[in-house]
Length: 247
Ligand SMILES: Nc1ncnc2c1ncn2[C@@H]1O[C@H](COP(=O)(O)OP(=O)(O)OP(=O)(O)O)[C@@H](O)[C@H]1O
Ligand SMILES: [Mg+2]
Image (cartoon, rainbow, N blue to C red; front, top):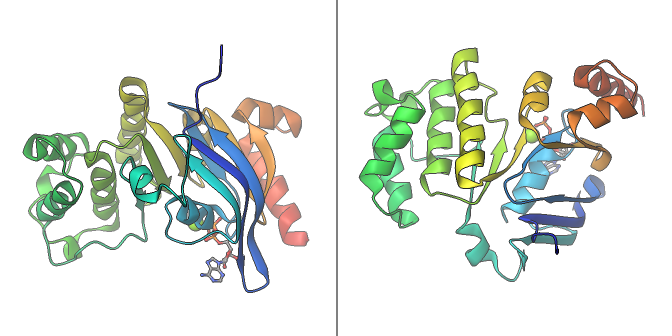
């Protein structure tokens, strides 16, 4: 039997800013319906990688294939099936939460938009601020809006940069459950970053550990913990991050 085409295939990807190598020859794949955690200390290259995968910045070298197609050559076709959420995202601040979701639904040609928006508002518990102007949202409310925007278009692949960073523990727990549910029911593939090691262990089918722009470990959380002979992922992280700072 042939293996299914990976949803994402990154080969030897590099990004240089001047002579600084932010991402330095990384390769990994994401299989259909897989949740991959991209882990690493501040400045390791996670956000830069996600920006290249979204076509926001151009790689210096290497290749990105999604759904078996080359991102450079099939950009529009690929990006239609992808969405993302990040704290740096900038939404029209004068619009209400609901208006912002409507704009996204229209831009992506979302079918049955009213029902889907209601559904997202319910799932992400946004009812009490759905008519609030975006400028006035708290950071956790803003995060939920960017997640709703990402889910609304029914993507096959989601890129989430620190999706739970500003959420209270209760909402963060619900978001994790929602991501797992979408993985199960819709076969959604997800690449996400987090500095919460427990979350990484709980959520990720596999983890890619970046350090100074390079992959230094890859596998399930248990495999990585066993390979480094540590008690848990947090210990592995501390060991690698401290090593990296001494270099
Ligand atoms: N536009 C840019 N110009 C110059 N250097 C940049 C640029 N964008 C990122 N960098 C540098 O590239 C490195 C990787 O940054 P990146 O934002 O990818 O890290 P990260 O792994 O997401 O870290 P964090 O955990 O802090 O979010 C950093 O040293 C950063 O300063
Ligand atoms: Mg980052």
